[in-house]
Length: 211
Image 1 (cartoon, rainbow, N blue to C red):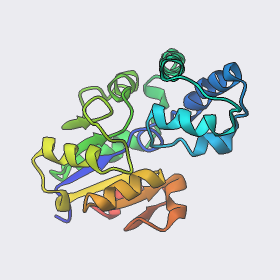
Image 2 (cartoon, rainbow, N blue to C red; image 1 turned 90 degrees about the vertical axis):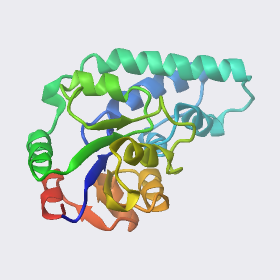
Image 3 (cartoon, rainbow, N blue to C red; image 1 turned 90 degrees about the horizontal axis):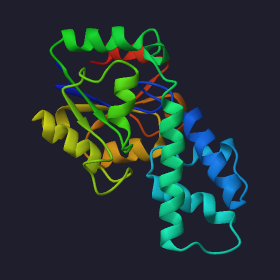
Image 4 (cartoon, one colour; image 1 turned 45 degrees about the horizontal axis):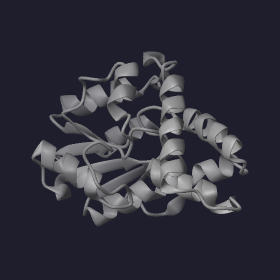
């Protein structure tokens, strides 16, 4: 067996929540009075809300207090969570659950490694709340990707050496985190354009050719 465990990023890998992030941040940017579009939104993938707000504020002609920043990150999350209520098991790609089941059938452990503090809520919405052997997310880490902490915590929870883990990621920050964690990584979606991964996946089920 090449790998003992597979650690999946959540947003953009298991399910697609980018649109909800965009809509929530757009409302915040409009309230602050700064320009925000899909290109800027793409820079926010895989990083924390605090770091995301700092990127949005790059074009802000002024300075926000820490209390104001906290207000906007909290408000963004409230908007985002409200939008996520629309999610359901139908938001899983048709091959995602089948591929996860076939990986598990090989005796390989599966975990989530996400910087999002909403990972468990999203998993509940798509019907995977009790599916993974471990969930490492924004609620149990101090440093967001590209720091490797979220993946190292996942491997610790699984009891698997990092070198026995494969990370599946779509964001540059996540791929960099996997490499620092001394884990092989498979890129999917936008992640394939960075030339950082050990494998590039055209579709989620291509994982079965690797593990």
